[in-house]
Length: 111
Length: 116
Image 1: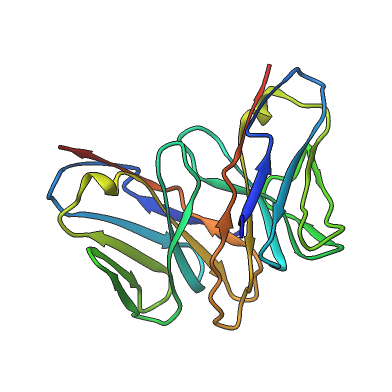
Image 2: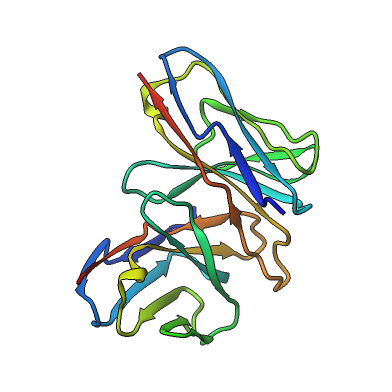
């Protein structure tokens, strides 16, 4: 079955440093989505990428979908304490009604 | 719109007991999902539904059952609770899947279940 892995599992950064999490799928994806989950909260949708090589930005967040549509990344520039949480990617295979969530990257910020 | 609501927020069960986790969405979404999230882990799909009257198994369906008699409601039934079912359960809904549509999944606040 489809597997989606994320690295790193944990990341501790000083406030103001950059942060990147990487997502890799065992199969080609029709789209990939990113979610953020604050401690004790529920996942909240951030963005969806569909096209090969697509890059989207949301303020300090940059999302990228690989050319082969099997990997993706999320980069946060100049982290802030509000960025704390776990970031999940979720991939959908072609003709598949189910999303497969990645293992997540937990980001903590050192003030 | 209230979005996706779940009840109860927290429950303690004894081994062998049963319970139903309620999930309701008021966004008229066709697609609904149940996930479990173990401490420090990702989300695993238990069951999903593509519309009223249609359900299908996800990655970890054993020990659970679902029904989808209406578009709004998607209850999850636990029969013979076991300690391995201690987890946080999230219900989610989505308006569209596939064909390049925006596929946002909206999550409920979760139900924390402890089986002792």
